[in-house]
Length: 115
Image 1 (tube, rainbow, N blue to C red):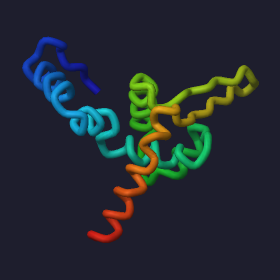
Image 2 (cartoon, rainbow, N blue to C red; image 1 turned 90 degrees about the vertical axis):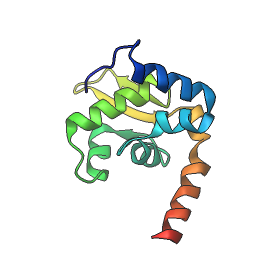
Image 3 (spheres, helix red, strand yellow; image 1 turned 180 degrees about the vertical axis):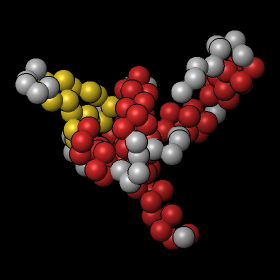
Image 4 (cartoon, rainbow, N blue to C red; image 1 turned 90 degrees about the horizontal axis):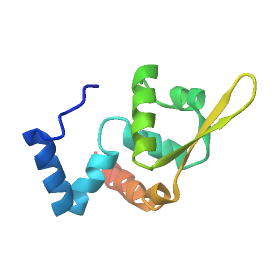
């Protein structure tokens, strides 16, 4: 994924909207094709990369890696590396992300009712 220049019109507008509206901020953090599904799957319990890969239909390893890095950077997930051979890495929700759980369950109910 390419990076936007911080002083580009797009980046400035994005920041203005995030500061203006909490919904826009939230959607920017969890938006995209995979982030909500990753958070939803991690809401059940800690998972390893391979477990997430199996549970997410058609996601590439590269895309899963990128999305996990973004979620970690945004402090929505915690990545724990265990010094074992082979190395074991687990992902889990932060307390901040756990607060979102009722929201995505409500979104799921709404989707079921409107499909």
